[in-house]
Amino acid sequence: MAAAIISLPAAIRRGDIVTVRALIQHPMETGYRRDAGGILLPRDLIRRFTCHVIEGDARMLAFSAELHAAIAANPLIAFSLKADRDCVLEFQWSGDNGFVHRESRSVRFLA
Amino acid sequence: MSVDGWMTGTKTPFEKGGRPRQWAGGFAAFAIAMTGIAAHAQPSDPRKSGTEYLSPATRALQSNDAENPAMLWVKAGEALFNEKPGADRKSCADCHTATVRPLKGIAAGYPRFSIAANRPLNLSMQINLCRQQHQKAATLQHESRELVSLETYVAHQSRGQPIAPWRDARMSQAFINGERHFKTRIGALDLSCADCHDRQAGKQLAGNVIPQAHPTAYPLYRLEWQGVGTLSRRIRNCMSGVRAEPFAHASAEMIELETYLASRAAGMTLETPGVRP
Image 1 (tube, rainbow over the protein chains, first blue to last red):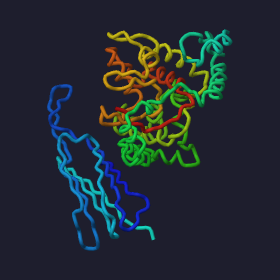
Image 2 (cartoon, chains in turn red, blue; image 1 turned 180 degrees about the vertical axis):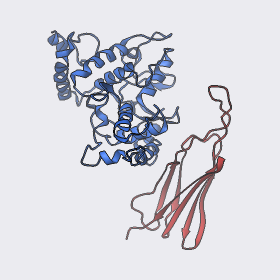
Image 3 (tube, rainbow over the protein chains, first blue to last red; image 1 turned 60 degrees about the vertical axis):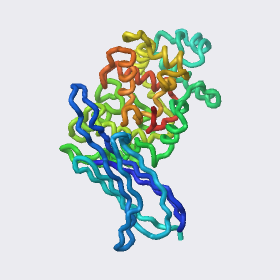
Image 4 (cartoon, chains in turn orange, yellow; image 1 turned 120 degrees about the horizontal axis):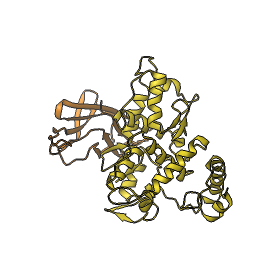
C-alpha cells in the first residue's frame, strides 16, 4: 500500500493561485538496474499523474504529467491552480504492474 | 580518579585524552560535566548538525513537511503503529497513548539499557522487543520498510527535543567501547571515524561536506538511498566506505558506537526526519 501526501494551503481565498504538492511513496525502478546477483530488476514506474477538478457532475482535467525512468523515487509533483470555485480535486497516479493510487481533497474557501 | 585534570584539560569530555580511568564512578562525573557544558555551550556550541551543511535546496526539502519525502515513512509508520499485528491483538497505540507512556522525547534517549534484554538497545531493537513481549508478533527485519517506518514515526514524535542519553551506570561500558570504536582505525583505508568526523569535519569529500557525525535527524532520507534508513545503516555505509567489515545490525559493537555518538550529541536538537544528499 503506497503512502501519499497531498498539501494545499491551509487558508484559501477565492481567486488565489495556490500551489498543490503531491508526494507519493514509489520505487520508480528504471528497468535498467541489476541486483547484486546480476539479475535485471523489472521496470516499475509510475507512468501518469493526473489531477481532475470535480464540480458536481462535471469532471475536468486540470493537470497531468507523464513520468519516465529518469524521475526520482518517491516523486514530488508541484503545480499551481487558480482556486476560483468550490470543488474536489481528485489525484491519480497510475503505472506499471497495474499500480493505481487515488486521493482526493476538497477546496474550501475562507468565508 | 583524575577527574580534575579531565575537566580542566579538555573542553568537552569527548575530545581525545583525559578521560577518567574508573568509569564506575566516572559516569556520575560525566553527568556533572554534561550539565556544565549545557550551561555554557548554548551560544558558542562548536557542534553542528548535519543540517547546517546542507545545500539550500536539500535544506528546503527537509524543512517543509509537504515536500520532505521522509514524511511518507512517518505516515506509513503511523498506520503501522495503530495496527494489531500479533496474537494478542494489541497495537503500539494501545500501550502508548498521549498520556500513558507518551512517545514525546522517547527517541531522544536511545540507545538505552533494557532490563528485559539485559543489554543496551537502539530504537529498532526496542520496537522489536515490544513486538515480541507485548504484541506476541513476529520481529521485523532490520532496515525493513515496516521497521524503518515505525522507527521514523516514533522518532518524529521527539522532533525538537534535546538528545538526552541515559545517564545509567550500566551504559558506561557501552560508552567506553563506543569511544574506542570511534577512534580505532579500520579497513583497507586505515581510517577511524574520528579521522574524518573530528579532524576533517567541514571539508569536502566526493562533493559533499564531511559532517561532525551527530545523529540528530535519524532515521533520515538519503537522496543516494532514495529511501529512509537508520543510523545503523549509515554507519555500515561509512564502514564499507573505508573498506572495513561493517558491524552487524543490532550487534553489541553497533550499539556501543551509537551510544558514544548519542553522548557526543547530548543536548542537540532532534530533527527527525532529516534529508541528506
